[in-house]
Image (cartoon, rainbow, N blue to C red; front, top):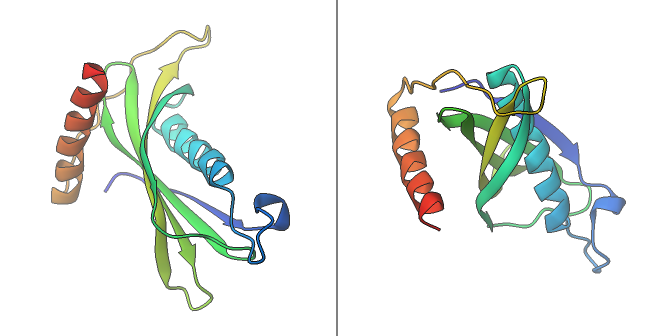
Length: 147
């Protein structure tokens, strides 16, 4: 698999809504997704990046006050100046088990020192899982371009 960038957060009161059992705001986890995705993209490109789009973000399970949220980001595809990053978010229980909260795909563009798009190194999938993800990324790209 490509290098994994990991982020860990504890859900605090300022991250939650006011329900009787406070849940993590969707917008807060989206911000964390953008940050960990950008870090993975920056590490891969060794440059600044900007978010172009967030593709397909579905919430499968909630995260509550005091939960630990673990996020894992990895590059799945590269173009000439852009790259796709997958971010998986989990609630990690105290026993170490995890339940997926969501999966998001983000597209970033690498930037040079003048904030202009710059070329990125091609990503070559190595494992069967990376090859499947790469093929799926090509399909997502076709869908994005058709919009």
